[in-house]
Length: 264
Image 1 (cartoon, one colour):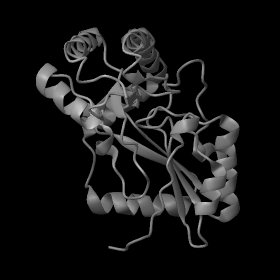
Image 2: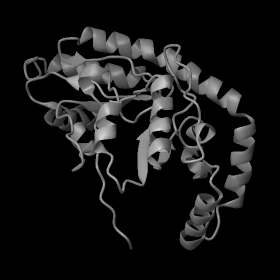
Image 3: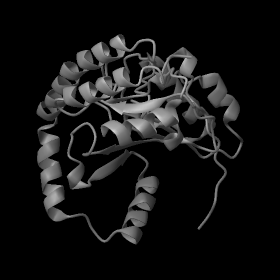
Image 4: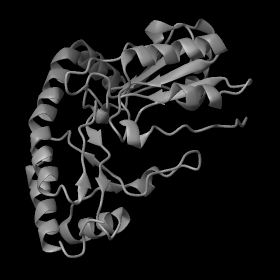
């Protein structure tokens, strides 16, 4: 198996999880072959402006670099934001990755795809697929085709759930504003709030799941040797129907332990 050197570039938490193209440009090496991005981003929910995304595509084209765009949360833009163009529509050197499990809410199908206009790249991807997997489940493929035809209706339903849920999360984090730094994500169904308690986010998440049965993912879950990982954040999802019971359990637990979780 061949190896490659990888350079990580963290989104900027102090500027709305921005992707700084000047830093990306500086990170490109003469032998760089691929840039990988994920928008709407997991776990932050970040979504760059469309013109910035187009600049990224042009940068990769000018440098002869392929761009792999992970678009699995596309269609779940929030706050009036519009979806970014498919990267594969903007450049022959771009690949768009998507699945049925995220925006469409059908993880059990285990179906995904890559769109690319480069014939040779598609051939190599297909050969790799045949090398690792004989075939997909035929029922899953049939159901995936049905889902894609009904994509507008499925997305409408998912967006309705998100729209109903976000006010509940606003109310929760508003009550505990001294313990959390909460901002709306730009897209997707997850967010990455900051925890301000003196006990630290790792201890808070550990105690929360053991004492209240509420599971959050602390920042250490997203640790990478490639980039610095925030040590005071956690991922929280708001894409399931009726999250109020979980928020109520979280709130009740916080009220009981207030002396241990006072803000820094």
